[in-house]
Structures are given as structure tokens and as C-alpha cells.
Length: 332
Image 1 (cartoon, rainbow, N blue to C red):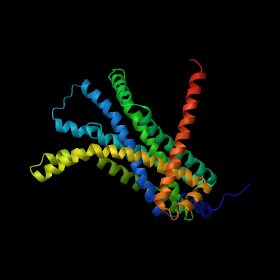
Image 2: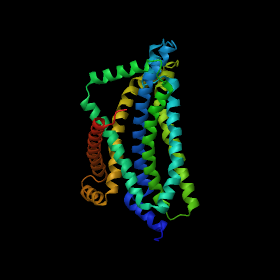
Image 3: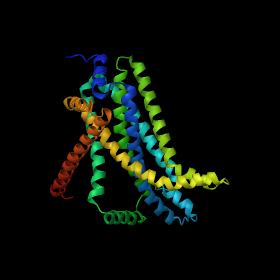
Image 4: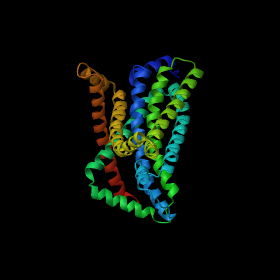
């Protein structure tokens, strides 16, 4: 029976494959991950807004103030639903960490060779999600999107539709994305403390998991409540406060739309980066090409390009498999 590799050797493998240091690599990952999560939550809020409007009609709720209504529509849902949605995703994120921290320790101790393939599967999924969004914007016209939106509204108007289940289903998608991003950051963290005693590894991993979750979702909550801050400022007596508030209300919709675009790009950067780091020859080739040609920026763009190509390939495979499955699926 072959004894497991020493933790020190595993730590060096993690360092070589997933970054030279915790500070540089993890800071970059955290920034990109935040953009992906904001985009995912913005999508959830947009879908939940449809459900909320239907629920409001059923309860005969009336919103009389146009300014308040516009502020509520900035992030896609009524103000009282924004924080609960973010909190629901944050709770899912904490559960992800509760699963990932012990799983990372066990995998590192007993099957360290599985870390890279598992992360690459997650990276491929991120690229797939990103390319699916990209393809949707090119393959579907605005009329088709409006028709789809109307069909969803009609379906949700059905009294038999479980609105709570609808919201939970949408939140699950954001939690799945969080799982992949969290796994990457925890893997990087584990690589930096691989030589430390087990107790210290547990403390560091748990601390990073808690701080990361609170920091990311605290910032997300602040972003989705910008509209409320703007509305609050417009109700102040000061003309300066009113001007700032109106500026926030005007800028917020554009900011949310830009975050959606940036979030999709971050999916390719993060997912492509994971795939590149998992294929050592490709990683070294990109590093060599980037040296003297823009450095980190060129490397990031090439990672993103790999992410786009990988996303297109995965989407093509998924589409073919789905069509074949529909043809040969046994009748119920």
C-alpha cells in the first residue's frame, strides 16, 4: 500500500498549479468572484421581481409613488425582498463552506490528485454559464425575450404556481455558482497552509471562509440597496442631498446593467483561469507569451479567451446531448 504524499509536497503542488501566493492570487479571485456573484444575484432578483409583481397584484398592493417604484425596480424587486434574497444566497454560501472545508481537507489528505480535475469541472461549468448568457443575447431577439418574459408572467399568474418554490429555485442557481468559486479559493488557501498542523489548517480555512462570505455578501447587500439610499437622500431637506440622491437613482440602473456584463466576463476569466492552471503546458505557454507583452493583463485576456472557447465547446456538447436525449427519451 502506498502511503499518502506528505502534506508539504501537496502544498507545493497547490502552489504551482493555483498561484504563487495567497495574497496575489486570492485577491484576484475574490474580485472576479464578487463580480460573478453580483451578476448571479442580480439575475435572481430580476426573476424574483416577476414573482413579486404577481404576488402584489394578488394581494391588491398598490404602489402610488412613482419615484419609490422606480427605485424598487432598479434591482428588479421590491425593497423588502432584496435583502431576504441576498440573505438566502449568503446562507447557502455558508452551507457550501461547511461542506467544502472538511471535503478539501479529506481530498488533500487521501486523494490529492482529484483536486485539479474537480476544480476544472467547476471551471468548465462557469465557462458554460457565461457562454450560455453570451449566446442568448446573440441568438434571441428582444421580441423573443419579451415573449418569454410574458409567458413567465402568465405562468406565475396561475394560482396553482408555488411562488415560494419559484424563488427558492432561482436562488439555488446563485448558490451553485458560489459553490464553484468558493471551492477555488479554499483550494488556494489550503495550498498555503499545507505544511501547517491540522488544527491550524482548520482554523485558517474556517476563518477565510467566514470572512469571505460576510465580506462578499455584505458588499452585495450594499450594492442592491443603493436605490434605497438614493430614495432616502431625495427626501432630505438639503438640496445637495437631493441632488446626490437623484444622481444615485439615475445611475443605479446603468450600474446594475454594467455589473451584469462585467459579471459575465468574470465567469470567463475565472473559469478560463481554472482550466489554464489545470493544464500545465498551456499555463506555461500563456505565461511565456504574456511576458513582455502586457504581463498579467495579457495573461488574463488569454485566460478569458480560453474560457470563451471552453464555454462554447461545453454548450455545443450539452445542446447535442439534450437533442439526442429528447429523441430517444423513453415515453412515460
